[in-house]
Structures are given as structure tokens and as C-alpha cells.
Image (cartoon, rainbow, N blue to C red; front, side):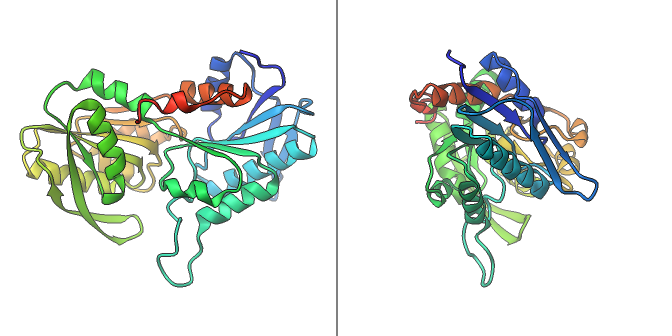
Length: 317
């Protein structure tokens, strides 16, 4: 591939993933100092000439979210002022995506606010994966490529599980994703009907679909506190599922997530590396992390070469 004029720069949120992406691309990370002053202000210094280059900034909005967001904005501003030709924000995990609508009086639509910030600072394009709400792409006036994790998760499911499969959506919003996987796998489809009491608190109520004597795979775009996942797993077992597994794209794993998953009935929990590894992941038995580096590298290569990236979506449709 042609890499002339290509620069990949990483913030501090998921440098390990950025290095893997660069390994696939056959280039080195752009030299940069991403630090903070003693008073906590973000410090960014790009250490290479980027004038006229095609720059890709890799930064997931991992904890601490606002610190990493400020890093991302400052890096983009530095690249713009250094005359980069095009700047793409590569956000494997797009934070604030759950705040995509006004569901109460006097609350912000923060997903839209983030889109405005990225656009105003000088971002020319956004590359992300498994947005919590696909309509967030409409918040932008610049191109947004929303990759799917299916090229990563589908081969794993095919390899590990053979017969009597049912793909389970943990809520109504996850049905389109679960249906697409079920179609590809010739598997059954089920839905957990849940009621959310408050933010980060969910209770699985009852099951729609047949799971008796089947291997159930709960499919979700993220696992945060794991309350939804664990409640769904217990509901499936109560309804006769032979075994329950989970496949999630973004492993946020905040608060009691590690403890809940460690004590859960899951046979396995599969996530990707869109978010960095947390120390308490070691306490979760049967946790498996699959890399998204190749998928992002292929997308970056196609964008840089002005090629179509539609081939990266083929397993989903």
C-alpha cells in the first residue's frame, strides 16, 4: 500500500491498539508528546512534520473520558495548525453515545455536542465502531464511517459454537444487530424484554423466543456495569438454555462489572480491544479479548488510498 503522506498519531487512551494498527500498516506511530501540565491542563506537542499529510488520530473515549476527549481535541487542533491536509478522528469507542436524545426535561444531547466539538475543531472525517445509536452519524456534517464488529465476532462464534444456537438481543434496540448475526449463523433469535429503573440499572423481565436446550449467545454493543448482561443470562437459564455466552464490542467494565461477571453463569465473555485493558479484567474467568486492529488498519488504508470501505461491511449484510 502507499503510505506516503500517511501519519497515525495516538492519544493516551488506547496506545496498545494504535501500535497494533501501525504494525498492520507497516508504519511507525507519529512522534508526539501527549501529557499534562502540573495544573492538569492537557499538553500536546507533535514531534514530526505533518504539513500536507493525511493524519489519523486514534483515541477511544475511555476512563477518564473527559481527559481523553480533551487530548483528542487538542491533538486535532495541533494537526490543523500544523497544516495537515486531512484529519480523521479514529474513535474505536465513541463515548457519550448513550446520550443521543432528550429523554427528560432539561438534559443535554451530549452525543450531538461531541459531534459539534469534533467538527468545529477541524476534524474532516470520523472512523468508529458499533455506535450505540447509528443515527448519531446524522449529528455530523462530515463523513462518518461506522464499522461493525461482525468481521471479528462472527468468525469466533462460527469456530466455537456449532449447533442449536440462538442469538439473543438484550433489549429491543439490539434486535437488528442480533437478527443480522442470526441470519448469518442460521441460528434462532430471541429478545430479552427489560425495564430500566435508572441509568446503569436494568432488570430483565421476560423472554421473547425459544431457548430451551439451546446455546444462547447474548450480543450487545457494550458491557458497562454488566447488570443487563447478568440479568439476561439468568433469565435465559431460567427458561431452559443449555449454556449462555456473551459477545460484546466495547468492554467498558465500570463499577461492579468485573465482580458481577466473575460471579455470573456465563460460559464465556468475548469482547474486543476498542477500550484498553483494565486491571480487574484478570478477575473475570473465561474473558476473551479479540483484536480490532486489522479491521481499523484496513479502513485507514482504504480511506488513505481513496478506496471504498464497503467490503469491510460485507459480513454484516
